[in-house]
Length: 452
Image 1 (cartoon, one colour):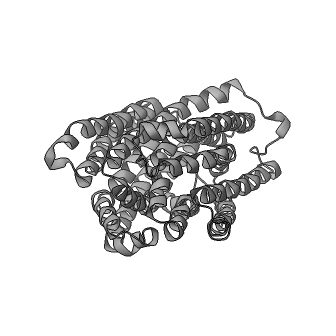
Image 2 (cartoon, rainbow, N blue to C red):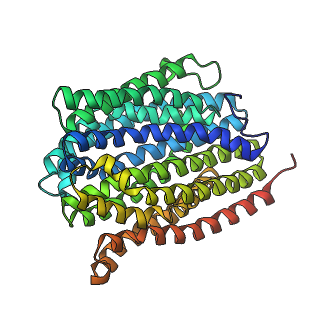
Image 3 (cartoon, one colour):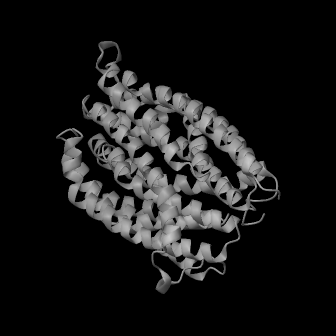
């Protein structure tokens, strides 16, 4: 099997599968950082520590999603240049992307280290877990510079059609993370700061491997340290796609942060169960989201190559895949919910019951989230990042905030289930409008298409 998928040629469905499987495994390994943190502290430190780590999730996403969005923009611009066979444009896009990653890394580190406790306080994090949550975030964000670099380096490599290398690098770092987790907690008697430190050190390893790969490449994506700088044309293109994508992700996280604040109002037991369920749910999400990332690369390269029909075919293939994955994995999560939650929670049957509530409401219709994101990522790659962002922000942020401040306050909806049911409703509504945007954009592309 070839290590590099031909994005602009060959069968669509098999190419999508070959490209996406390594991305799924890579993303799952990244997710295992947090899951390993929670599993270790759950077994050795108790449910309060799980709640402390879980309470940081939505806030962490809020702070870093702008930078993840910018890395998405970098991937789109690199993929577009590769598809258009623009050698000089590819080189400038790569070096501009790395320059952006350095700046973003500094901003992310300073934001997390200095403002974590204040932000957690604004979220209404329970007093009994606030100190542990703040400690976890400060240590975690202390290494955010290398993490942001990995976002951009991984986006560049994936844009070339090579998805196995990031998998290998994250596998090495993931094993290291698990070993260090156990070592710091069981041998050095550390708590949440130990698992956060293990994550940071693992990210240093993965960043080193990504850097080595870029420095030793023999194509237009080869990195030269002395050439790292901002080039105006690719910078504007990256910002044009990346800023709306990052804002969209941050608004998603903002709505999740507000939802988390509502969860926090029920106390640390509910927070613990919700956090453990969200960790399991994350594996389903990241599997589906990997196909969304595939649509982005396929859209970017085929836009550059002028092969617009392949964009539609790739979107259909990825949508079918996320539907199957969502139904199968969502059903499995509900079927095996109790033993899965017991991996994280060992001292609170009540917390497990709340985790099961979340999985029933969120995991069962989770395929809707996957379809929504395939459409959104395709629209971004077709240079409609701002319009896609507006649609997603309205339904995945404004709608959810309104729900928390209206329906959730009614007695019949003032429960964990009543709070979380807004997720599948917002996914469905967002799908309708993202689909309308895609149909409009695609028809417009076909009309403007020049003879090939």
